[in-house]
Image (cartoon, rainbow, N blue to C red; front, side, top):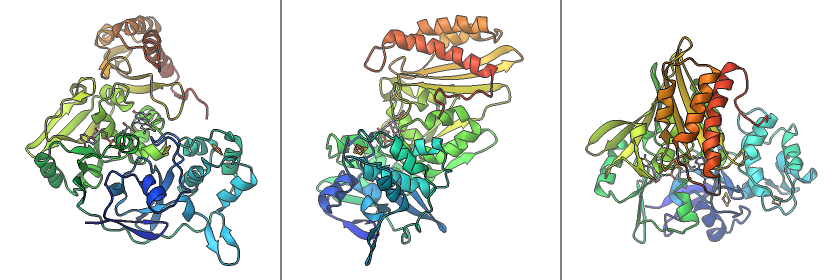
Length: 472
Ligand SMILES: Cc1cc2nc3c(=O)[nH]c(=O)nc-3n(C[C@H](O)[C@H](O)[C@H](O)COP(=O)(O)OP(=O)(O)OC[C@H]3O[C@@H](n4cnc5c(N)ncnc54)[C@H](O)[C@@H]3O)c2cc1C
Ligand code: FES
Ligand code: FES
């Protein structure tokens, strides 16, 4: 069956194109919309930014995404807006720019112009969201768009201008989607229910599961892989669920970072703060927490956090379901406990009790859009001044995310004071044998890991202190 979506309101029918062709290649090579640029082809530069517009009840929402990481079947049923669709065409006046486009032109916010279309799309989506126009929010909206020549001052100045926007671009009703798309030996499945997904995966266990594609997309975009069997999890109803009970927050494996952020901000603000540093809006609008878990990367940002929070995974297959502690999910470098035909259904994070405190820290060379050198996530439960329980978890210190078990033991039953924290911090610095690579040396990692735990102690002394290094 053919895929269907619209681009700037124009209907597209996709029949004889590989399912691993990216939306960016389609725009530029198949329909000659070359305003959307290709820079890195791996989600870092934002030159390829486009918007997915969605009707939600009476409202239209705009989500920026990197078109270089999205394959065509992921666009199925969607309304896409590109830079060519922003300015309106008027018979008498030619192209009528959006106010933010005008501000950029008038404020010299563009030089070579290569990054500009992506920046316009990000700012257009920002102004059509319900976010307030603070410098912090503008910074976040632009974090996924690199500009290498102008510098950001004139761009940020344009973004700061108070602007009223022209009417939101009208989009038609949401479109229907296909169940399967095939081309030249490649099969792309789009199950709608958990049952369908389990059945297809048990029939074709060598299939590749695709959630947001912010990891996998690079293999299509950069390596030009033509994977033969792909199962997309993003349309499975049960995997899109977020459930908050008295005891826990449960997040389905197709839920994106942007969707969980409001919950994390309420329940685990420090974790939320770390999630806002995962990639950019473009990445968080499609990338999923469970995709991060399944990659089992030693520097996956959320893994030590979920470990310290005692999270559990719900694993599913055609044969049934099982639960496993997240900690036991990682076996060795990028190897997980999943068996053939099994997939992650959801992750459950227990809520903190009144005696527990949790904080997470990410250390990377750049504040935004950077891969961690070390991630530290710490949970401590107090009985008055005494440590009743603690989980000290790290990423970047071993081939898999790990707890500092020996250091934890040293702290249990001890008084929570500077002297004891310094002793434990020293122990942490000796407990791992991390590698040296271009992100950080082994010595640096050991020292940072110990120091982060001291930082945790000092942050708890003053709960009103903001928990981030950069004052945005
Ligand atoms: C520019 C950029 C910046 C990034 N920044 C960060 C960062 O700061 N920190 C960080 O940790 N990561 C970062 N990432 C990596 C990536 O965004 C995350 O790992 C993300 O969470 C992956 O989720 P996804 O839904 O896109 O996964 P996908 O790419 O769809 O899949 C990832 C893996 O998970 C498997 N998978 C997906 N769903 C399931 C399931 N339900 N059950 C079993 N297996 C499944 C897939 O088969 C694949 O192996 C970045 C990536 C890019 C491109
Ligand atoms: S081309 Fe750089 S993010 Fe897509
Ligand atoms: S205007 Fe040249 S890179 Fe942005």
